Length: 301
Image 1 (cartoon, helix red, strand yellow):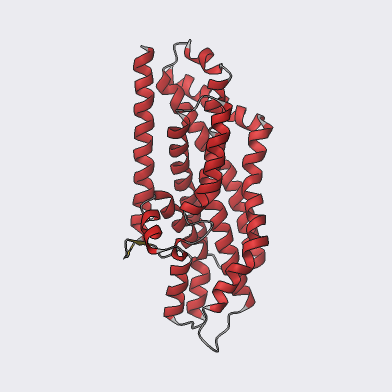
Image 2 (image 1 turned 180 degrees about the vertical axis):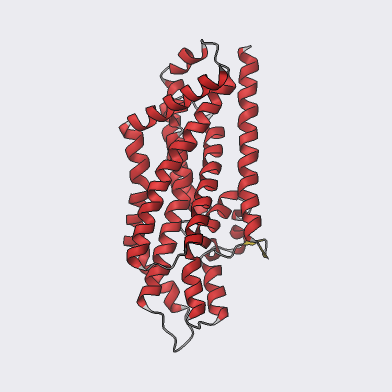
């Protein structure tokens, strides 16, 4: 019975999200607009960063430069949208409270834990679908600009997206649990959309910040999600740099500059550690969300 109710609620929440043209279009268009803004305003900045650091007398093929720039742009968009879209798609939970729909659901014998789990699962599904669409668009753009990714890189990138979406869903579920009005939705959405890209290193690599700020940002789990997506997006381009004989010092410096290599208080962070941090943060947030729903369930009882 509980399983049937759970899947029915998940189906209802996913349908409500995609039927709400406002939420759906904003969620879908946001990563595409971000990509357009990045290409328009940051493309030349990223391109100059790759060329200005070259040792004297060395040049990069235009295709390789374009491949590096497009991979960095796409990774920035995907890392931001994985979290910001989660907050957008999770608005249904708050809207149900704001318009009173939640009371119609809670007067039934439905356990609040099942209700909360259905919101979480539906948010994850909706956010993942939007981000996979964005990923396809980003990969097409990279293919046109300069393609260097292997099939293995693409698989790892998709895994990174799934993991970051899980983290974004968990974070949005905990934050939105305490919201109950349209005004609060707008305020939180604005703060997350404007700030997350900076604190995660997506808008500007954290290597460009001061040491103190880098240390603070390195504590935040979103930084490691961004680094994973960027690492696997740009892995092929870096392999091509090695193949054409660019100095190792230059390649390592570029990995540092774009946060493919990331440091925690001066110590290099391994790839497996990045996965552990994001997954651990998601697990902690999910645990908090479960406890919040259990507390609500006890209050209802």
